[in-house]
Length: 284
Image (tube, rainbow, N blue to C red):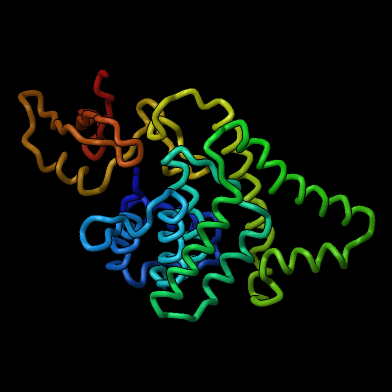
């Protein structure tokens, strides 16, 4: 199966920091990121997979990022979105339901540390992911309406007709502000982010005709989108380019891979900008 890389997880978190400016910034335990991304591929005694299907694999990743406190803030959101992207990369399309924040808060609040209890929690997460996931783009569009848009619209309508207390209590439950009052500062941002995520994913997947998931744009995460001549590379690759030997025209060259879509690309320094460079796709 296709796995997220360490850099993918970091980029997901960076994007969330942009979406939620009140979040504390930074990574607390950088060494645990590699452990988290390797977890879905864990094997027992060198042979049998500990997590045999896409749901338990995504759940193991989500549990790790949510509970290991890798980042200074936003671990629950990062864990949820990484599970979403893990499923997406393997052509499974998840709807993020309106009460997703509540579920991630429940995971984070779990204090059990025994391996048996952790595996039980991962199975619970896997069942939750399975409920909201399909491998059919058309069914995904229907699920977006069923689990995200219609429940949201109901609350808007009830609020319009004066049921404000009921709507407030529901939102407090969905967004866990009854447990974490500080979340109220970002309720509108969370609501808008989930809505936008589902709308954009729905539009992209309803028009998905390409065979391989790596050819599909990842929804909503601007830094992870790729179009022709709009690829991105790691800073280490940039350094390699500028440290390479120039040709007779003074231009430096480097063959590399797009950090996001993994396409083969060719880099050339820009003769008109000493700090700039051009990116070209290799012909198929």
